[in-house]
Image (cartoon, rainbow, N blue to C red):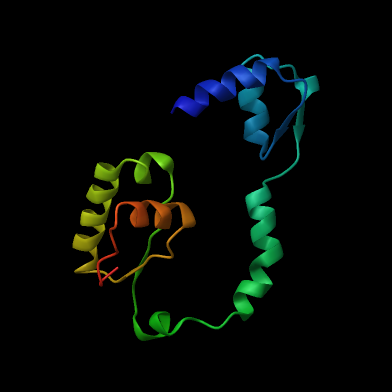
Length: 127
């Protein structure tokens, strides 16, 4: 991915690098980054999950989740997926097809909502 090139260059010119995992430390060492610049700090996503898990567990389950045995959860917000109207159309068509055999829960990200509003599209009733 293009951002990987940016990461490689940035890692080489940075004075301090903070990693989420020990394998990140090993990868940087393999890339020639001095160990003196690398600090393992943990995974902020996992740390956030652990911190918020009690709140998530105490939140009532939405009625939809109680009424079905299986469902798919959709997230859609990466610029490469939602900024190009034809790519977004293709993804929505695919999701519509999937929703015919599997109910989908799609909490629409603000970025995606903006793109849908800009193209005057709405989500199909089954999504």
